[in-house]
Length: 366
Image 1 (spheres, one colour):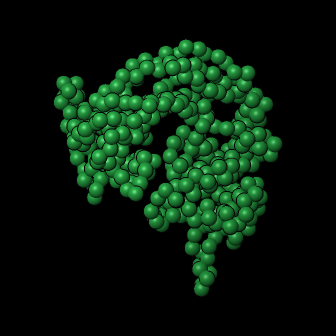
Image 2: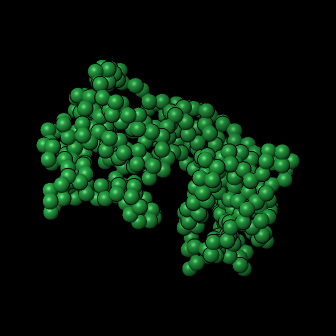
Image 3: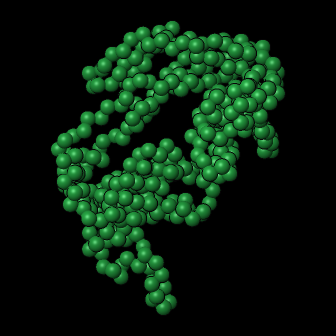
């Protein structure tokens, strides 16, 4: 059954709808969008833009996902118009706005940076082999491949990560063709009628997937088709396609690592050890998630964004810090909240870390 939900996202960005003086004097402009049954208000907020939605979907989860697509599209157009860049939208809150409810489902997320950095021990033996091999390399294409491997690690979106890894694979395709001793006539697609060379094919990359990554021909064809759809506009980038890319990314990354390693003449054992390592970001944010019930709340107009219900995190005391035997952290915290514009009950607090977190566990002292 379709319900109507309020959803809020925040975006860190240099783009603004008001000038600095107006923002500092509390005079905020807002833009309104009506996309079918979806209402959106975009306005200046602290160090960026905030977007509020009234949107119709089947669940809180669907509303969160669908709203993110809308705000991403709006940001793409804003960044295009200003030649700038905005950060990935952060989900802030959601609640059920269906008429006649006494209690409404509510969820809010706080993003709290931690002062601890992730620590990954650099293996001197592995690094020495890479360093020595790199110093013997004379091909700029390998250097660029390593640079784009790093770029792929930095990307947050699955689409961008896939593009970063695959683009650099294609840049070393000819080198891989030489490495695998693929005949020149096998590297070019020819016209079936006259035999005229048409374009270079990824024969080197294909052999890399087959021989080193151990991916069969059918899977490689699907990965390459996804690349074609992505880079040549072969269809919509919907959730199903993005999830498909997400499955392919580990294989494409593994292929790029193997490709770079083989071209640098590194040992298979060293390359395998690198592949086994889990990439980690330098810093991270823990997510404090509150789930509650709103009671006796009158729905404001979407443009009245300062009247929406919310919880303010007024304290987040670190009570205890321990270092686990594996080097990860065990934190005990005591968050305190202030209720704004509504009555909340049955609050439940959860803590989430990133997939590559440096935290072993977080304990909440309530």
